[in-house]
Amino acid sequence: MNPKPVVLAVAAMLAAAALIGAGYVAGAHRTSSATSAASDRVEPQAARKVLYWHDPMVPNQHFDKPGKSPFMDMQLEPVYADEGASDGIKVDPTLQQNLGIRYATVRQVSAPDGFDAIGTTQFDESTADVVQSRVTGYIDRLVASAPMQHIAKGAPIASLYVPDWLAPQEEYLALRRSRMDDGLIEAARARMRALSIPDTLVAALDRTGQVQTHLTLSAAEAGVISELDVREGAMVTPGQTIAKITGLAKLWLIVEIPESQAWQVRPGMRVDATFAGDGSRHFGGRIREILPGISTDSRTLQARLEIDNADGRLTPGMLMRVRVSSATPSQQLIVPSEAVITTGKRSLVIVRNGDGRLQPVEISIGRETGNDTVVTAGLAQGQQVVASGQFLIDSEASLKSVLPRLEASDGSNGTMPASSATGAAPTYETTGKVEKVTAGDITFSHQPVPALGWGAMTMAFGKPSPDAFAAIRPGDTVRFAFRQTDGGYQLTKVDLLGGRK
Image 1 (tube, rainbow, N blue to C red):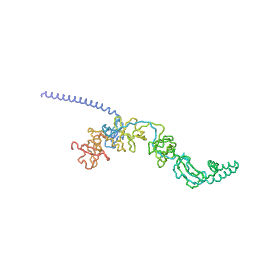
Image 2 (cartoon, rainbow, N blue to C red):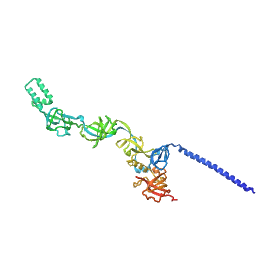
Image 3 (spheres, one colour):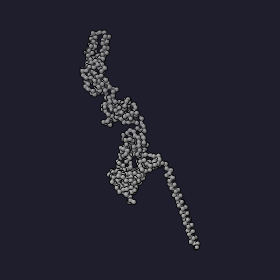
Image 4 (cartoon, rainbow, N blue to C red):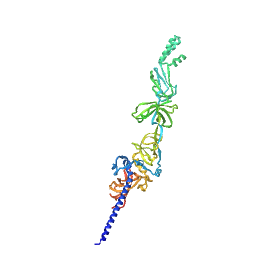
């Protein structure tokens, strides 16, 4: 047997073994290096703090641990502490300019606390003059013809005939003519005073010697006859009210305080009132008293104050716009009223974060002051909020649908433009695998849709009609387009990719 081939075979086997060993060592070294490098890359990720998990489709719902979303067929995604500034959506600067988006700064101002209310003017009853009869007599002439008639100071109201005054006056004149004792004459004068004969009438009796049986009742102050309770020829008795004269130089303003603001109002608060027909005229004063009781009809508390009406421009019953405020100002945050979105259940503003993203924030609001609204919670001084008219939306549903439309997009993101010249709803595109086809919808396991903030997930999209996309079957890989409608997300295009196996 020739030993040379055997030696060559053994040498070849040893060389192969050496090569395999060297390859194993090199591979192990590369694997170790790769593992070490991967570990270096993962360690920072592993060190990141998770704030919570959420479903990108329902970002406001937070979960304290990972798992499957209760809303969609997808896994919850973590939100890290260092991603807090990336909440919201990014709006392309060009799109901002096209939409006319304006921003306003949350400002802090010093202003008195207060609220707006409605008030009405009334007669100042504290200045009313009551004209009464102090004797028994008859109205032989009534000068005032009806209530609410204007009357000047000293003007006659009625002439009263008093027959009981005849006898004491004649007795007095007889004593004077007979030159009786001065004591008797003085007693006769006292009797006339007891019968409510005015001193002016007694003086006229001494001067003329003529008996006076008529008394003229006059207005002590200028104003209007707010009450007139007699008619000509009627008999009156002592203590009976003939008329009531109410002045107009001062009026009462009765402020209707909403029940929700009743705890704020107190005597001494300043009031600035304007006539509803002329906002340039202002009437000021301080609340004098709070009337007890809440109106069961209007659910308001009444406060009363006195306002000046020396020029006589106001009359009782006028409607006034009232601003009630405290004497001491306080620091308050305000934003433009057009920036506040009221959904019916809550109020929101769209805040621009430090990284330029837009995010809806729920706030608590107070009163309105001109074109601004007081914010009591939810914002801080210096924050930027969207103040353009495009965001004045009256429902939360509209808010949720409008925010995704502001996402800037291009071909690399796999989306269609956020808006079109025709104003139609924006269209979005992505790729996915068909999981299920029914008459009403198609279910896809699709790739992320960045414009909507969606990750990869499985969900169903509505078909425009039962026979639409008839060639599409489960298992197909497709590229599809969809848009948001009132009934949900609806397909507009489904194209097969790569053929069907």
